[in-house]
Length: 162
Ligand code: PNS
Image (cartoon, rainbow, N blue to C red; front, side, top):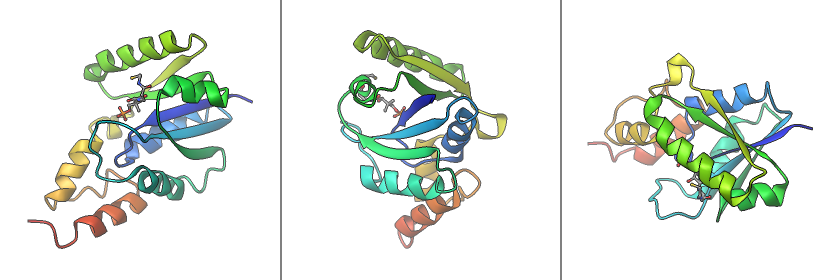
């Protein structure tokens, strides 16, 4: 069985993330979406809330499981015996960061490889941080996130918009 891990912060999970996850199912039989837990980054949603939302979104796809992970991604891959990481690339500007992560993960566990999928044109402008900012200011992000995420953000910001 061909397995892969799709790691990320997913704060929140966007249509861009969903597109990468579903396209990767053409290459892999089983995908583990791994939601980052421990970090110095400040998140809007808790790891469990992010994971639960993604579970709702990917319910129609039994080939996808969703887990949270802390510590090193390379250790998580090793523990699960999975050798391939999937990451999305939106633009050249993503490349340096992704290249650095790829090299580091490979150094930490040299069995790991990373498959990069280019974002499709309709999703290449979507970013979780911009989605959060726009949603918090009352802008419409309905076309950029799955309906479950949209409803969650709507509830979160209800009455808080300027
Ligand atoms: O969605 P993001 O924030 O771009 O995802 C980044 C992620 C989760 C892939 C990366 O931060 C990560 O793997 N963090 C876990 C800690 C780790 O293994 N660090 C070394 C490689 S960067």
